[in-house]
Image 1 (spheres, rainbow, N blue to C red):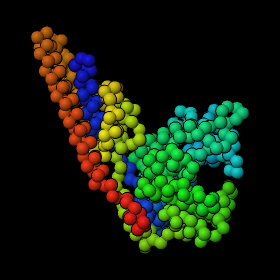
Image 2: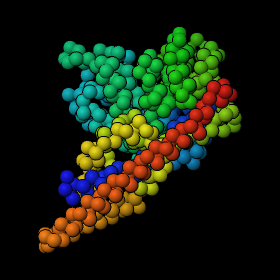
Image 3: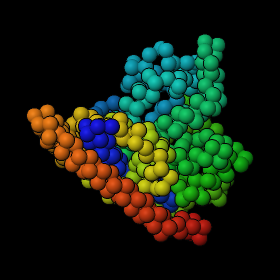
Image 4: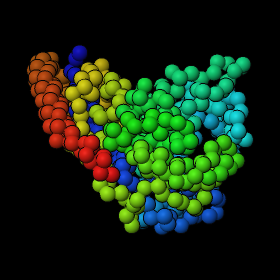
Length: 440
């Protein structure tokens, strides 16, 4: 492969194996929640109800300063903020609606005036939805509520082109999960209970948000895999139909009985998601049920569902050294087995020079210094070998040995991190056992 290729391989391997950045903190079973619609020019009081999880759409405020004020208040009250993003349809009143070309817009969404289906198969759609996720990350959102994941059940594009399929929806869900996790946020499943068990969605999403499951026989039970996995289900039941198609509950007591029996965090709301709030579970003064604890951070890449063979120079450029040891400790043997020389070989010293980690200027400086130093040293070695044939042969031998040593160290590091992960996994196996779940 040559000295330059070997150096690029070794540098990429070190960079990819060690510099793993994005982590996200999932919400926990037993955390009370509030779902709240916002209105332009009106920043709500986030002190009441005093529950830890708030589900909002910051961009309904239509003002950068109001968004900053709201997010600051939420963080001051130690709120875990889930941010709403419409991923399956276009609301023509959205701030960014003008960015969506006609080529990706489908039929009108029944019962929701001003909404049209999006072609989730399109790379154009995904690029625009990713931009929405990036804005939510910049606001300080902890998690994402992706709405309208189940549009494949509707007449989305016919007769102009084929309708969306279940396969399209599942592919989109996996893309959304990976994309949001890469941005350092948790991702929730919005409705879609009939797919949870059949397609193991509890392993793809960190939590679920469910609407009106108490009004459909057996529907709440479809989300049981989330509870069994120690992941919360936030359930909303509605007392009014509103402008859309919110099913109206028969009574708050019967709705709460259904969500409580499923161990969900149920709330009673009007369809327009006003300030009103009734929690179904019994919470303490801070909005927690007995047994609820702060959730641990989860490291990206090696713990994600996406195989490492998808990693390239751009993926590595989003990582940072200060997350190395914590993130690598979450690596699993299965995930590590997907890391191949081909993936690492795609990363070059030139790509590393452009590596900039969004959250940390200090880490970005470290990355640029590392890349510049590597390039300068490689250039010096190349120049020296051109000036002296004897030195070239000697340098080649020395560098080949050095690269071999580096690769050996990498293998040892990965094996050690896999051992740590297996040890930690065994230690945490009882974190969400049946007795603890019953306690909450």
